[in-house]
Image (cartoon, rainbow over all chains, first blue to last red):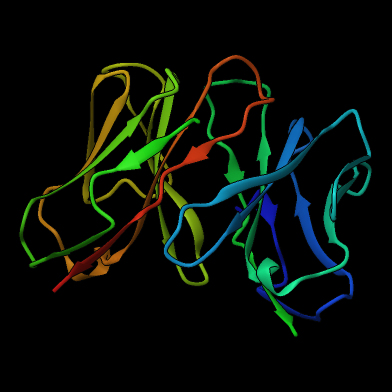
Length: 113
Length: 114
């Protein structure tokens, strides 16, 4: 049973517009959420995170929103750039340093110039 | 600069061969992980280790084993490689101490089994 779901396998956006990537989770015990970005033939790199006590976290062009009641989070990229084209993974963490992050299957974002 | 390194970026092996994938981290992290990434399947956890000589099965441990003799090193072993183990293998490490810690990933090893 998938605890973290990214229902859109792919997304295509024009350069300069907003990209919105969505993620749903089922386990209400998750207390920290992360987004990773992955280019082909490279390892994922950390992008932005949010704790469950917040509903928004912003870092430059990237903003993550958390709706705990809906068990939903989203990543907004504004404005989108061609270099943002990558696979984005949503991940969630339980309050325990020994447990692995739980990842979604990823969304492939293509930003078209 | 924190770093997770993997012994090879690309590897080609034959069916039935024993394959070793090595991972080293320099952050003194307690936890280390092995994933494989396949198109449409995301990141699937194979094994993880939360301390030296400790290991836990992940979601897809069949056909794999691991070894953690030193804190900084975590090895993934394919006892008898098969073509369905052709994949991108990713190692990661994470500090213990609460959930507000990211996992750091290595660059990955693209393994092809012929």
